[in-house]
Every structure is written in C-alpha cells, then in structure tokens.
Amino acid sequence: MSEKKILVFEDEWETIRGSFDLANLYAFNNELKFLQVAKSQNVSFSQWSDIYAAVFVDITLAKKTEMDGFNIVKTIKDRNLIDLNKVIVMTGNSKVKEKLKEMGFKDDEIRVLYKPVAFDEIARVLKGIV
Image (cartoon, rainbow, N blue to C red; front, side):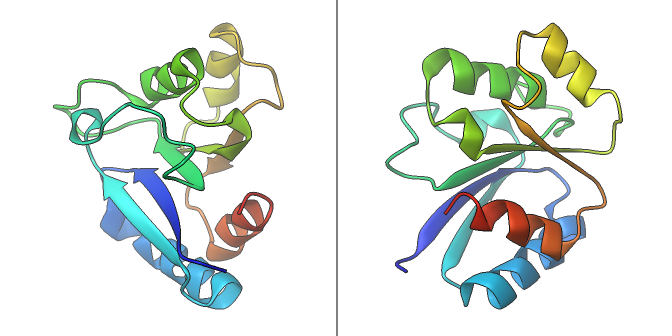
C-alpha cells in the first residue's frame, strides 16, 4: 500500500495522537500520514477525494476557528469534497447524532466515534475505508 493521507480536524491532537499512531503502526505498518489541523481556516476546502483517504472531524474545535465540526461536515457535504462514507466525526457529546439528523444527515451517512477513542476503533474504521 502506498502512503495514504488522513486529514484530522482536532484542536487537542496531543490527547488522541497516540491512538492514531498505534492504529497506524499495528494495522497499517505506518503507511498512513496524518495531517492535523486545529482550525478550519488552516486547510483549503477544495476537492479532497484526490488528496485524502479519510477525514476525521472533531465537533468542538479551537476557539478562534471559523467553522466548528458541524459546519465542516456540512461544507464537506454541500461541496461534495469527499465521499461522506470517508468522513468520521469524533466527539464526547452523546447528542451529536441527533444534531446531524437535524442538519439533514441520514443515520448511517456519517460515522461517529465517541471520545476517548481507542486505537482499535480507529483502525477498524480506517480498514473499512482505505
């Protein structure tokens, strides 16, 4: 497998980085490259399907971000940046699925992982995508 890039919107990367690194080591022989961004304005919102194999979106981002996770997911869908089956929302909020439904997303359209996220959960989700 050639190197696959994974975009991760997360403002507390150091608290979950170990889970991503372990998933990469044990399930992908370190062939994944994670690009972490804390603020939505730190990444271009142009076509992503040719660049990223998957996108993880934390719902709550840094205070000075232009878009929160909900708006990032909406932008991904509205602009068709990448297939929604390659988008994974990360959250500690148990009501996120309800909010996504209110925004017009179907139950199985977006995967949701609840924090704290274990490396085997990340590996399982990524194996189904990349």
